[in-house]
Image 1 (cartoon, rainbow, N blue to C red):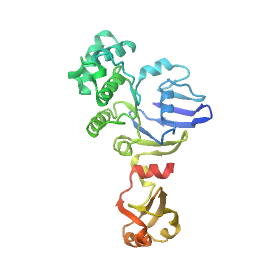
Image 2 (image 1 turned 60 degrees about the vertical axis):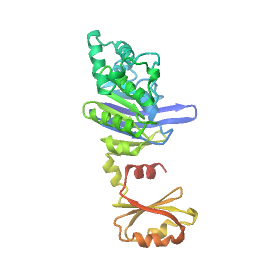
Image 3 (image 1 turned 45 degrees about the vertical axis):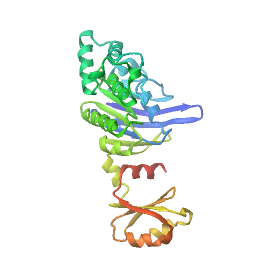
Image 4 (image 1 turned 120 degrees about the horizontal axis):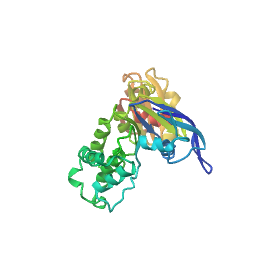
Length: 299
């Protein structure tokens, strides 16, 4: 559905995208994760025809962003991290305005608005002004606005950032309900969100894809069935090579004041902990997560 071909973008001396290549399948929910400044927002703004690349192209359902941007814009619904909603509009009027901007037939706009307000749980607030809404309610209206023209592709940029857990959960369930029906790109800093929702995840850093695959595939690359996590007082004296002498140890990473030890089994955990004597502040074990993959790849 989307084919990104050798995409590059510079902002002065900053290399936001560096020869990026990526294929996104029709009906797929692809996650883009990466640290701040990794190039995620630049990539989706180029796909949405908001920015032009310095080099490369993006094909959306066979159409080039360089040659047919208007057609591509009609195929995409985009929810930016901070939706720019016209605050003096009532929710219903805002959606009607954007429906008209997209050239929707007048007889289809009102039924579509009613459908979307019901879908995002905002039917009772249809005649309330945007400036009376909390951030969570604005985000719901932002989603409805992105969907007003029934696009084939939906792009969510940090849709749950700064929201309370209950509202975040509601929005995640809504995004999950669109899987398979729409082609979706989800940019998020929340690893559990990407792990829960995405068919595949691309780890982006410094404008390049470091890794790509299903959450289970990416987690399998960490190796081991258990991760031992140790918070250390004096991290400077830790020697990974000594820890690696244990048979069950498959990998050792030092992140900040923590030592992460990937283990094929838990049989030697007590012996490993004894190595640190009184230098340990806390200890816990867990199964590998997408967050562990992220930390290893972008450290």
